[in-house]
Length: 261
Image 1 (cartoon, rainbow, N blue to C red):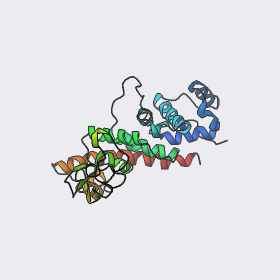
Image 2: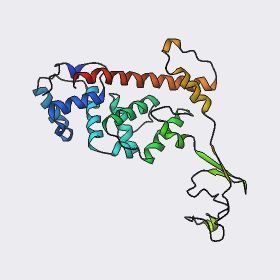
Image 3: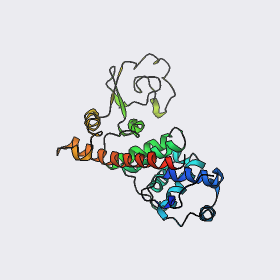
Image 4: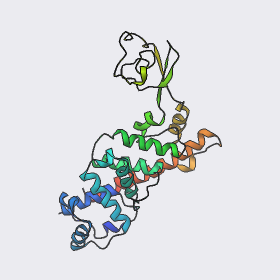
C-alpha cells in the first residue's frame, strides 16, 4: 500500500489525474466503479480526512474518464468532465460553453488517463466553443480541431466553384455531377468521371500570423510579454492566458505525481 501523507487529498491546487491515481494506489482500480459514498467511506477509513467538494469533483471526473470512452466521443460528457477537472460542479440541466483554458486542461488530463482519439462530434464542439470566444487559432493540445475551426476549402479551376473541402475523391462536386437532380451521389455521375480534378485547396481564412505571434511569446514569462492593441494581439493575449493555466496544471501534475510513484 502506498503511504501518502494524511492531508494529501486536502492540499490546495491539486491535479485531477494525480488524485485519481492516488485512489488507484490506495483502493485498487475497483474504486472507479463504486458509488461516491463508498469511495468517501473507504478513504476516510484509511485515515484521510474529509475533502472539499472541488476535490471530489476532480476524483469523480477521473473515474468517469477511466471507465468510459464518452468524454472522447460525446460533447456533453466531454464538457462535464472538463468542468469537473477544474474542480467545478457540472450543470447537467443547463450546459454553458467551455472556456479555452478548460478545454486545454481537459484534453491534457484525458490524454494522461487514456490515449484515445477524439471523435468528430467532440472536435466540432471544441471548435464551436473557440468560435464563441472569437478565436481563429487553437494551440496545442487543441490544434487537432483546427480543420473544424478553420474549414479547408477548394476552388475548382474548371468551373470556378468554391466550396468546403469535404471531397473524398478530389473532384469538384459541380463538375462531377455529384448533386444532380438534388440527389447526393457517392461518386461522379456517369460520363463525368474525369471532370473537376483541377482544384486548388486553401484554408477558410489566414491564421498563420496568430500562430507565429503566439509561438514567439508562449515561452516567455508573463512579466516579459508585451502586447499591442490590435486584432492579432488581442487573440494572442487570450491564448497566452489559457496557456498559463494549462502550464500551471501541468506543473501541479509533475510535482504531485512524485508523491504516489
